[in-house]
Image 1 (cartoon, rainbow, N blue to C red):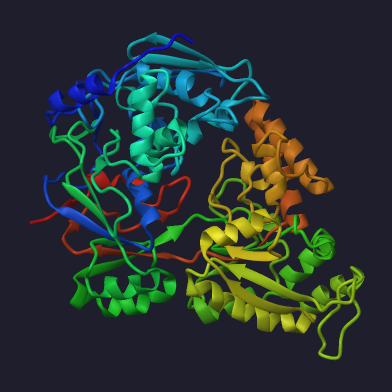
Image 2: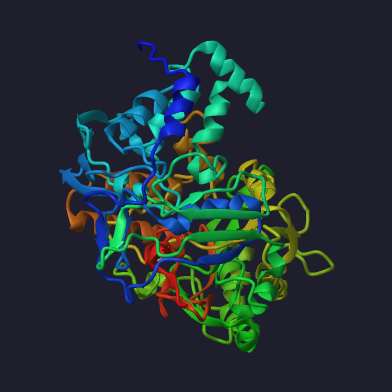
Length: 606
């Protein structure tokens, strides 16, 4: 590759002399479905439990090349137009006059820079481009058709491409080249780059580049953005401020550029204090850190806090689920968990109706972490499999699995003589997890199973899961409980390391076999085969057939143990904050929590 140099002096001059005018693109996106068009000004405050959650400015901002609308249909957003041919060729057209937040043009060069100079650079991406950009090992042919048009072409369909761009944590395929070239070895003289690395304290230029290029990590407030608000606060900070992007691409029907609100502020507080601070009116918009159990307190505090408490539906397949680690490092526990009779028994041993009554005022429904009744793929036999409370059947299954020996304390014995003493680990951030586990523990005593709880920090817990050190984890269920046959069934096959029931199998897929372990359980192997079939299925009937078989295997095998669904999410809103929906769906992906409701259209009444 020919070395293309750009001195720091020139880069600094360009940045210093850039004229930034508050103006949308010449071809803006007109948002016509705003309930009440508003006025510019004011701020929105929200609370977060840790500094790393500053990434929410990308999540809540929810500006995407293509994004989901409120009906969970994909549509162009940042892009003016998307053309798809045979599911394998994608032509993207940019909006005329669109600029980054610093006023520099957003062009095809930003896509080329990412694909040629970042995604395929062995120093910046040692494992290569994102796995979603690979179809059976084939990377796309990338073309710049003109200054505002690019195309990605594969020989086979890539049904994951557009949904990944619309994700809460979006697939990144364009970067502000004009800003980031100053940190890239192909564009800067070696001595200048070395000086920048030393000044930053980075290990090398690749780490320097990473610290300045990862918008989702919220590490560089100078990184130009296309989001409605731009980051203004350098980490670490207890108060992260974002300010309106003067070149944001959306306008309302009156031609007023969005976002309406000037600043979106994220205040870091101890997560356990969030409900109390909401009750004191120290936020304007809050869902994170609030649970259904907080609703009575929030309602009682409304007059004092000036807040309204809304209740939104959730779309997760299960509000909470238990994840037995089929890749546990302990060989005895690993074999116990791989026996589907054990997993079925543990599920049958949970009195979900009692949990709903004790913790959720009886409104939660038994769930097995598959699909919800609102999904077109719902089938009652599948959706309710192994959710009935049946102690006798559960004990019979455990006896049949060879766990019929018990100690003097009534606790069953493992094949090696140890007691069936099961440690369920939690992230330690949510008292709700402990409350649910306390009830499950009392119910499993009737099975001769002793449950213990172990809290830890989220990052520590994940590392323990990945290493096989955990036996079981409690966490939210599958994110999208409302899938259609056209949506990816990836969550039901071993495809990701963060699938807590089989992290090593998921890692094997994510790294193309370079790490982790290949699935070696027939049901899991079949799920992966079906997932691969879905990727190339051309007909709706075929995709639906694949989904139905996958759901049948998933629920029969009870790879995860869903507990309840239908637990509503409290959303606290300041009384003078306009356009926050009274009824919504609170979900991570698809949904981006508030993202699909476009907080750039929220505004503060005088």
